[in-house]
Image 1: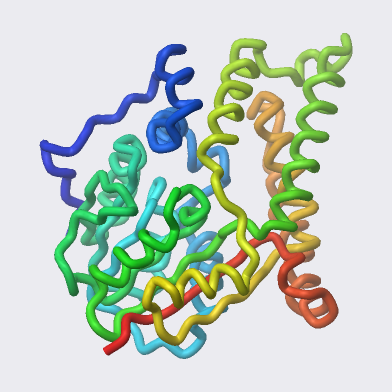
Image 2 (image 1 turned 45 degrees about the vertical axis):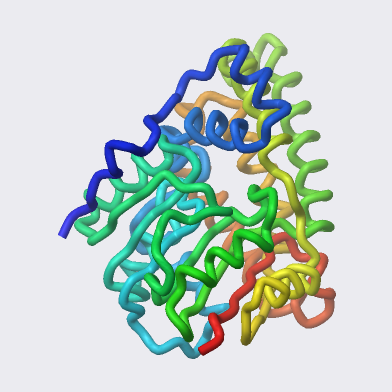
Length: 324
């Protein structure tokens, strides 16, 4: 089976926003979401080292199992809210979590890429351009709703979770992962800013200029960063996020957190990769980055989790069910 195209009535991607559109988006978070993610859609997988092989299949499944360790699988039909390029749902489907999928995102460009990825993987997936606060599917449609790094983009998180519960069948479950904790977001942003400043200034020096991206690309990244500050609306304390889910009507709510030491490596690595020409970073760099992340993730899971309060970890995950 292959992916289905979005309906003709859905908006089309706009990957090249004008300066006027960007200026307007600085005052309109939903417009900013569309422009920023349409701009990033075609290069998003490369930027975040997203793949649809064993590495990311295991990662996605690990996030799911961390908050739902005893699920009865497979779910029949699953939807990803704020799908991006389809990273979470498509890899979960490959791991056996669900048989059929639907991808939704406010960005037409992201839905286009997610459906293209699904088709390349031979997965049974359809897609819609959708506002997370008004999901365009009928009541009681899905057995599972998932999302990765999406809730912090949504203006009214509680309203979105009400919509998630509406489209879930009774007893259906939602799982959201990759949400920034309040404390984690603070240190991640400072690490990223310091890495960007250091890299873009050091590479101005004569012997290192070949490691500098063209100024036009750096300027475009800076404009994207300005929009990123608009699209990243929330950070979450784990207990507060659980409270929002319960207020929306969810039952069986549970949260988990991950990545502390791993975040202190991951964020400078990602920022450095964005600041230098990609051809400078070969297999050795990728092996270092992924290997280092795995080792520090082991440290987080087996040592730091036992002694550090959950709120200090970078990523928050939340799950709940629709009451029967």
